[in-house]
Structure formats: structure tokens, C-alpha cells
Amino acid sequence: MTVRRARAGEAGKPPRVRDVARIAGVSTATVSRTLSNPALVSEATRLTVEQAIRESGYTVNLAARNLRQNRTGGVLALVPSIANPFFSRILAGIGAVLRAEGLNLLIADTRVMPDERGRLFDLASRSRTDGLIVLDGSIPPDVLTAEAAPPVVQACEWIEGLHAPSVRADNAGGAFLAVAHLVKLGHRRIGHLEGPPDNRLTQARTEGLLAGLAASGLALDPQWSLSGNFSLESGRAAAHRIAAMRDRPTAVICDNDEMACGFIAELQRLGLTVPDDLSVVGFDDIEFAAHVTPALTTIRQQREEIGSAAARLMLDLLAGRDTKAETILSVELVVRASTAAIRS
Image 1 (cartoon, rainbow, N blue to C red):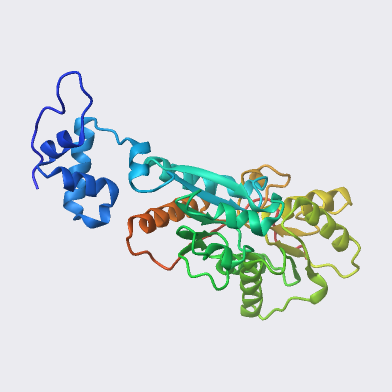
Image 2: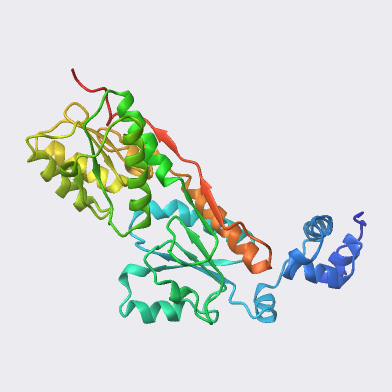
């Protein structure tokens, strides 16, 4: 299809849909379909109309479009803790993609809601949001499948029994990498600081850690399996348990960086040196992982890409396009100063 060069609009007036149609060489109905539901037009037509829009300077009246489509113009992200720095880059990735499509990102912290179930039902309504991006795996699935619920995408965490597209990191593979790194350094006595036991991330990372140990002919000593809740405080509490042990591991893998940072700080306050007395590995690579002392060896998630991939899935759902049921993004080991070869 050839784009026809033409004057964008009448002098002194802003460009309109008919100006875009004239430049693109298509009907106004085709322009409207491209703007409202691009899945209904061919890729060539969509690209041609988008080029004509740029050339004409036409801008969509978002309020009018949302009214016509019975949309709110916003997508709501349900986050288990806004205070957790892990979520910042995921939300940034979501926001960037939605903003480019004229949609607003709204955020709700699911852990600070009174009457949580009723409040969630209220939030998860088409009248309040066009779609839900769910980062909290503890939300009951019936809240998200109610008749009034909008389209749902799961990001990072996932909910058993909820049939909605999801995007997440390779959690089991990351824990496997952490074990392999420590084994390569000569560690055979490896402990585990876990997240909440009912959390999907904890379960996947525990699965990967156990598989990594088994691949090296090792097993997790039950006394070196420490409970936590992803917080700095639970990392500090675990340090006291480790320091009190006569028979300590030589390395500990933590299910997230916050716990690892609290763990390292308290170990050193108690007189143990990292990594000389104990090597420590985290998971996530949040911003301050590189700035603690010693800098934290960790598993890096593509957090911004998780967010942008989740937002793209949401756009596909809103446009009626087919979506992939599950997307698992690769992770990488980032080696810093908190791990070292075992002392002989």
C-alpha cells in the first residue's frame, strides 16, 4: 500500500481522521479500526496508517476514544508491597509500554487493604480498570475470574488455578545456577534461607536449589533450611540462627536480595565475616545489591522486561489478539564479593 502525500488538514485546524485516511489512501473506517482494534486490519495497513498519523500530526482524543469503547483508559497493577524495591523496575517496564499506547498505569498495594477480599473485588472491576496485571500470587483466583473482572495478566508470581497469561523469570533455573556457582568454589555445605513457604517463588527456587544439590551429589541438611519472609528483618533473624550453630554451612543461598542484605549485615555485626566465614548468594539483583558491603553475588532477573512483556500481553488481550499462555525469561548469575572459594 502506498502512502499518498497530502496536506494534513485545513489551514489553522488540527488534523482529523479524514486527513489521516487521505494520506494513507484508505477509508476513515479503516483508520478508526486501526486505532480501536488493530487486530482487525493487516500488518501492512496498520503500518501505513501509523505512518500517516505521524506525518499528519494527528493525535487521538483519548477521552473520546475511551468513552466510545467503554474503557477507563487505565490498567491496574496489583502489587504485594509497593515498599519492596524489587517491584520498581517491573512497574517502570509496564508503565513505559502502556504510556506509549495512551493508557495510564494505576498501582494498588494488596497488603495494606482493610477488608482485603471485598476491596479486591471492588478494584478488580471493569468499571474501574481496563485490565489487571497481577504481581501477587496470593490473591484468590475467584476475585480475578468474577463476571465483572477485566482481562488479567500474571507477572512475576502466578496463581494456581487461574487461567490467565503469565510472564516470569526462570526461578528454578536461577537457584540451580546459584548452587553450581558455590559448588565450583568448593562448597559442599550449602544452606538455604527461604521465602514464605506458600509463595510460588519460594517453591520454584527451592525446587531449583534441591535439583542443583542433587546434580552435584549433595543434599540440603534440614538444620540449614532457614525460614524467612523476603524481608530484611527475616534475613537478620536468620543470621542469629546461623551464628548460634556449632555445625554451620559454609555458604547460604537466599531466596531474595533483601533477606540476603539483612543476613550479611547481621552476620558481620555478630562477628562473622562474609565471604571468609560464610559465602552468601541472593536472588533478583535489586539496585542496592551492588552497594552493600561486601557487594552481593546474586541471580539477576530481567525485571524491566518482565514488566514490558506483561504490558504487551495486556495490550494483546485488550485488542482481542491471541496470547502465549506462559513466558519464562532467562536469568543470569552476577558474581560479586559476597562469595569466595572455600578456605582449606
